[in-house]
Amino acid sequence: MELLYRSTRNHEVAVSASRAILQGLAEDGGLFVPDSIPKLETGLEALPGMTYQETAYEVLKLFLTDFTEEELKHCINSAYDKKFDTPEIAPLKAADGAWYLELFHGATIAFKDMALSILPHLMTTAAKKNQVKNDIVILTATSGDTGKAALAGFADVPGTKIIVFYPRDGVSPIQEKQMVTQKGNNTYVVAIKGNFDDAQTGVKHIFGDQALKEEMEEAGYQFSSANSINIGRLVPQIAYYVYAYGRMLANGELKAGEKMNVVVPTGNFGNILAAYYAKNMGLPIDRLICASNDNKVLVDFFHTGAYDRNREFILTTSPSMDILISSNLERLIYRIAGNDAEKTRQLMQALTSDGRYEITEEMKEKLDGFYGSYATEKETADEIARVYRETGYVLDTHTAVASKVYRKYREETGDTRKTVIASTASPYKFTRSVMDAIDPKYASMTDFELVDQLSVLSGTRVPAAIEEIRTAPVLHDTVAEVSGMKAIVKKILKIEK
Ligand SMILES: *Cc1c(COP(=O)(O)O)cnc(C)c1O
Image (tube, rainbow, N blue to C red):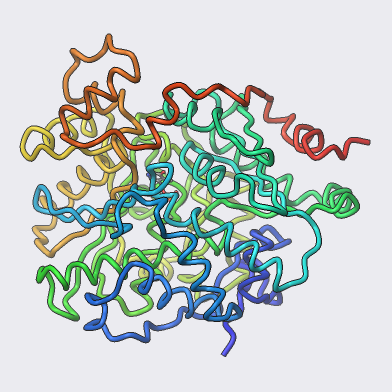
């Protein structure tokens, strides 16, 4: 049976999975959500014997029902290949009383690779299936990691162009270097004078611009999105939670059916939403622990039921979580509202006009599987130092937020259930913050000296993603005002009138 996708803001809209991937966002500004969340078909006992690719197929086939088996397997095998530095794709490492699910073994050493290495394949397959003749223009706002992962995924993919906007002062030096050195003659990188929310809102406006859409159509272009609002990013992320559970069974840490907790360092709420979908598919997950940095809008939401973005935007050492408008939360809101598109539309309207909304008591009760807490900058740095000192394992800043929040959770609840922590970036991506946390004496070293020092400390090899930017030339140097984003897009596509 075909699974259809509806807009969170209008129940009348229903499209196939491939259409939802092509479109990215629904025309009414809503996010596409599956009509229902399918149940896992494979028994849990089968999971330990499955490779990452086989596990991904089991998940994708249930959500992307208008793709053939051959198409899906082709996409999966093209994505999860030698671009990853380990055949396990997402290895699970035991350390410090938890299991770190390392999602950073792909081309750009952040968890975004898990979805963005497959999205271009899903998208070009979807374009073929739907007889799309236009070139697809991927428009993406990034807090640092999505941008590079999307650029790497889409570079030189025929029939596509990719434009990435990033906040000029809101990404790490390595993140910026990774993006501005991107090769490929269909790639464009623009720094904007604003924060991530400004970039994301700007992109949403461009998507919603009907006049621009018509001009694009005339010129043979159509937009899509590589942000986690695209269902083609969300669905592949579900796979690694299922895989992690299989690994926990294989290692004898869990018995089939026994529940695990999951901790996710959260920004746009995409990664943790994937875990929530996995849980709804029947994967035995108990608590979903949502970890935030100082931008703790989600923590307050889980505690009070009020989502309020009217607060200072704080730049932290975990920039990929510096977000006050967590786009994917809309999908959770829709679900806890009982798939009520009208209610969701009203709440999102309030978020746009007042910067806040409040959910009902009834909705709040449905959040009881979630736990939210946060780590301050000092706590995060101390956590990196502590885990390194006690175990030799080096966490990146984002994963350290999750690790600290997990400790707080355990202290508060006494829950000793086996717990998987989503490890979202390699420490090499945030070397300066990581090394500063371990010892202030590194402060005077250059970024690449720090990289070499980290290699010595952690006993790990410098990833290829870092080696290749050491000497790479800067190829992108455009800087724009937030108000100039649309003009830049038109200029890039040469559709100025
Ligand atoms: C994107 C990102 C996050 C946040 O993930 P969301 O899906 O946006 O919640 C956390 N850590 C790292 C390293 C990231 O790149």
